[in-house]
Picture (cartoon, rainbow over the protein chains, first blue to last red):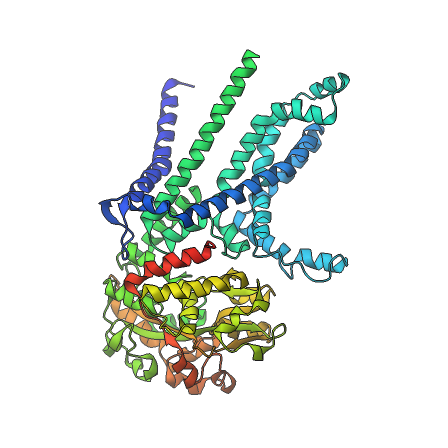
Length: 283
Length: 346
């Protein structure tokens, strides 16, 4: 590539990032420091009021609940994905590609539509209940809809590929001969998993977990559609402040706080990764 | 986060489009979803030659935010509910409606004119009105057991209740049980209502106000709040879903035609409103959307069964027991604070 065309591409990318990434973020940050006004979206003066309100105990409760739900979703995604990816990585190339394509296909449908699909499946008169009733496994329909369980089911369904793909990228490189060697030397299954598989796949596990955890905090429509809007999550609060209560500074402050929180998680991740790499080199 | 930005950009562009097109033979109508039959809009264009540019919204808040951002430009006719009329009028977003250009105003029910939210109907003309009452699935709950808002607190209905995702309507329930006005601005009364609603929460299955009839039809919710028009539509699919006017009084609302301050096609807006108030057009609207019309002259045209349907047309006693919403002004943040507490389980 000629240096001049490289500069053009970088300039274009920089432009694109500034306009669609940097500028909105800056607007959000500025809005979060504006004053609140009951009849306008905001008042043009500097104020820390919104950040002070963030410390309100009910908001902290909502934050804790969102974190709890995101942690449960992440852990369940991990538990479901790990054996799946482990087996997939052992397959021959053709089967492996088929499996990965099957994982990707649902991605082509909008996530909102897939949330509605979950509703049709787990509803009181839904497919799942009809099937279980038909098989005689239950006498009265399970009432799954509009509960935290329903929200977690929906979140796992939407987020699973975000766990599978980073894990796969990591496990694909995993040298299976290490397992064979360990077995020859008399290691049991637990030992192989804890001392060989787990440490070597840790970057994939952490990467996948962050890919699931971060978007889960903001998926407000899953909580409203499957949870019945009973338990507000951080995403719902931001949505409500911007579009219902017309309190832009508070909504912007919440968004800023959420971004900062997730950003520090990403930084921690890169830090751990770098540390692991340097240890590898040293070891 | 990214989703939110995309939404904003899309909204901003969506707002610019109607603002850019200004043409004399058009009228820009911004309405609730499923609120005017398409045939009626076509008939208007055929009769007057005025093209209707029709856009819809799902909540007063969304409509208000859009008009406020654009400072009242971009649309010629909008349909805010009761208390949003005086909120918007007070904030200078609306213009005075010229009654002389709307001769059909004479056919309107005096009971729905000159209300607190807009004295003398300076800024608004009623389009349709309705109530928020109780829906009961009479297959699962004997209908005689449900007569009052208080019955929703019955422990038998644990995890079965539907409430509207609308703070004013939900607070109306508790305020009217306590004997207070549902338009109160007194923080103490609002707090008492909150404490009462908190006891109701274990019964609540979900909050919904885009189409509250759906959870009843799907068999998820068995009892709870509903708009009368939604109840009417639900009965067409499942006659077991009954509508009850609670003894403490239902919550009444009116959706009105208003003309935003920055409207470009003012004359066409008046023509449109006058057309919508014609008896045969009002009849077509009632038959299609299932809410009551304030056009008295349209009532004789309605099918007798529809005209006598108490879901659509409540008795005078039920109307007098109920209350119409008005703006609560500076008390709104107080409601909001308690609403958030209620929704976050505190």
